[in-house]
Length: 248
Figure 1: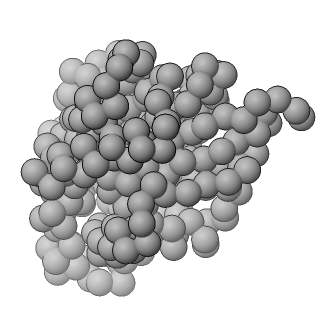
Figure 2: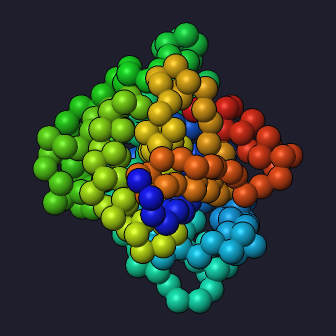
């Protein structure tokens, strides 16, 4: 299929407080660290240096993604693009692991089970109870979402089941308007990467997305990948990936 190229930018939010503390964050709405804000500003500078100005931006409804996007747009300057806020782009819900750090989880469940929950494609962690404060139904941001659609715990596969319909319904049409920026989270973005690149469950378990470094895709008219690159030097990228591997 012929037609103009599309530009898609995927950006994992800057470092959050719980990233630094090595905690399973999930849908918990924790803020960015000072480093996270710096990473977000640097992302904006990297996009500006690459000449990429988003025509439309999408973000999750969690503050670490929203604040990252705001920092990026401030660095880019110019007219502010339309912003679409979507709970479907939220991080994977970590169920009863949410709030625990890696050491606590390994003590409670063992290192093998902890690793399986972190890296498995299809196995969700233990779900929160319906009366657990970590259940999304207690958050007014999700009041309009049918209760049966709100997760109690998710695997990467489960996360993709909500991310990909949003991709088809909302992001794909926006690609006709110009570059699209999606600011989200490690697992919601891995779901998109898996789809775009045709990656299988075994390979995606080894793919790590660093915080605060734009990942730019060139897509053809049929949304096939013509090329992709991170807007960072080799050392910065290697350091970012190493840190992503260490975190839950």
